[in-house]
Image 1 (cartoon, rainbow, N blue to C red):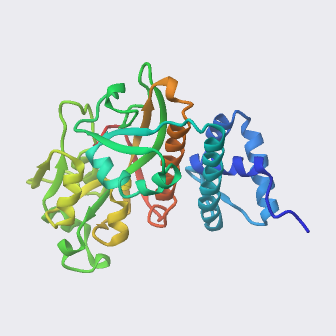
Image 2 (tube, rainbow, N blue to C red):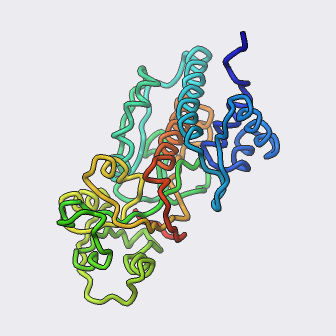
Image 3 (cartoon, rainbow, N blue to C red):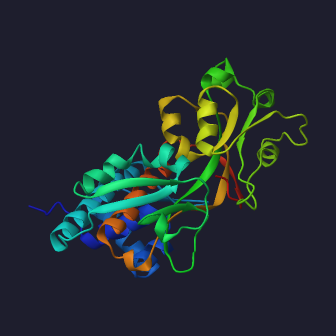
Length: 321
């Protein structure tokens, strides 16, 4: 009877290609050539009997069976890594302190953290929040999650996710079915914003987004300001106005119906979230597992049906917290 397990190298190549949706980055991660990644993925597709990826203007994307297969395979591969680390290094760390902004902790990390705790039930995991997104210091925690810090001297930095801004609001605010909502009516609502002028050099403004909507040179806009993005999101849920928010922070609220996306026009951010730690921690099995797990959770967001809907995206450079 034929062995029902595909070749391990093909699975590893598929996992990395799926994580980054980029053959070159997958090849860099595994230390092989781009051609080797493509060859292994094609071999896996032939072995399974269906296409797992498709080409788009932006690069690779999953087919429907490919997205489902990736979620299963990435979880299985991480379980293999974790089991191997436990057996091979029984002296793993006893605790992990994660330094992160309150917004990322509340809207992304905490709702998902049980999944990582299940991987390391004997590790005491705690969260330490910082108010401002600035450089990570080792005294902040064992690892830090920061937005827009791709490189920091003396630190090991790994990308977690890239994101885009969505126009969102409470369905109760609209007072009509979403399909009947005229985008020009967005001007009748308060615009919810958060600002950290001391640390943000540039960030996408409401004016930038309104220009993308074809609503340029609009006067007399009403703004309501908050100190942090989680406050903006909660205010939007409560019907106080409309907000521009990162997809990763509002994914659960969109899925639950607490928020709705008002437009398929998104502003794609040039920067992203990064995991930072001291270089000597880069081989720590718990920390590496946490990085891989974060990447898997980020991929679930980018591969979700709502994220794959047809959209128009504008790339902008700035740090929006």
